[in-house]
Length: 377
Image (cartoon, rainbow, N blue to C red; front, side, top):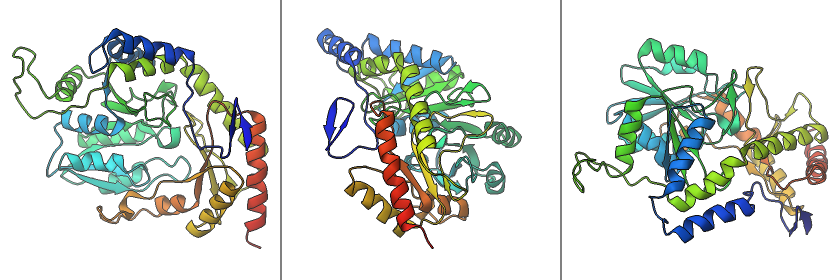
């Protein structure tokens, strides 16, 4: 057992939400008000505050990040016969949301440093059926949006930012979520701020916002109750979730600052080298550091699994990088060598609000010992 914050834990988790009296007070207020479903004052407050945070005109709360992506695609009228370009290294929800519309996700390779979608690969993948691009700000690092948006403008393609992991990340001084046609965030329990489950669609496009808002609530007519002009969805967030999100958003500067501090502690204590690296940050970027990323060039899946198992035996949780989406049986294989290589060598280490420098130093001590013990001769 080890003391982390105020708790004794047998295993330091990869992530956990930071819940204070503020969150408890807001959620309790929502419960006591009787507004426990998808109507209530916290929803509107959370949406308006999050729009301001992303420097956007509009924000629309959703039931989770995946439904937010699906809603964005449907609002853009993407459907059967269309293609949408996505990076091969991402959580599978990015591609799945495209499939839900009947469109086809086209997986392309990533940049070696940022782990985000490669603009050169995008250009090679465009076909007459391509309708949109979904760059993913992976592990909290923003994608390089300028070359991507030039390609989108040239071919008249929509751009949806998958910012599920990147709350507060910045691209050339601007926060993600307001850099394209729309952005989508996740508030799952392991995200930088959480509503338990939940998401947010952000945009500066009024027509996109209004259509997404209608579709989110079964596409119910605003003039004729229980009349529906088209097929919609129930992708709403509850007032209780929004209360939790509002409290978290009020603390986001503190939560982001501590993540940055945690990564700086890792940089101080892990013995890095050209073959052992931590999170890359481009000169034009401010990473949200959703996950601490450790890459070891001589890892493969077998060596990494052994490393992770040994960490777990020492009371430290970890997780592998995402698998390439194109490696999964429901999708066609893609030629994405960088995504495949990075997927095999990357590990995420614990990073959350309660970690202290002593905790991180202890994690790093074990990481250094294990890497030294299993390094090839």
